[in-house]
Length: 206
Image (cartoon, rainbow, N blue to C red):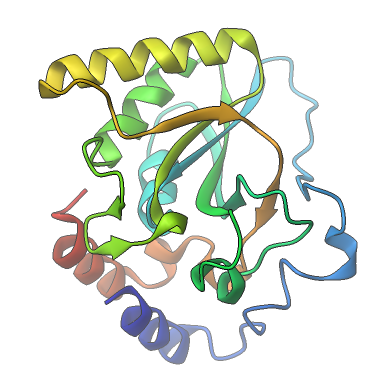
C-alpha cells in the first residue's frame, strides 16, 4: 500500500521531485552521515529513531511541543550511502529512520521516547503493521551512555505495560544517518489525503 500511495503522491504533488536515488546517494554523501543541522543552540539536541514507515514517525515527532524539526532518512547500516530504492530492496542494513532535533529546555529525551513508543507496535519484530522487512524494523540509536540507559529503561517500561518479556526494538549505537529523498520529507503535510489513507489503512491510525 505504501508503494501505491507513494506513486500517487508523487504524481499528484511532486511532479518535479528528484529521482529516488539522487538525494541520498550522491558523492557528497560518501561519509557515514550527511547531518547538516546546525548545532548552535545551547539546548538543542539531535536523536535518531527507526519506527517503521518514516512518514508516520516524522509526522508524530513534528507535532510534539519542543521539537524543532523531524527529518526522514536511513540509519543503522554500515554502507557508505543509502537511498529509497536500495534500502527498500533489502540490500542494505539501513532502516527507515527519523532525525529529531529538539529543545531540551522544552521537552526531555524521555518525553521524546514516549512519543516514539506511542508511534509503534513494540511487539512486532518483523516490521511495522503492513510494512514488512528489515528496513521497517524498529530501533533507538543512542549517542551517549545516558541516552542508552534512558532507552533501555523505557523499553523495560513498555514491555511491562504490554505484558511481554521484551520489546521488539533494537537499542544500538548511532553510526550514521542519510537524508531521504526530498519527496519523502514532510509527506503528511504535502500529501494529507494519501497520508491519512495510508496511516489508517496500514497502521491503525498510529
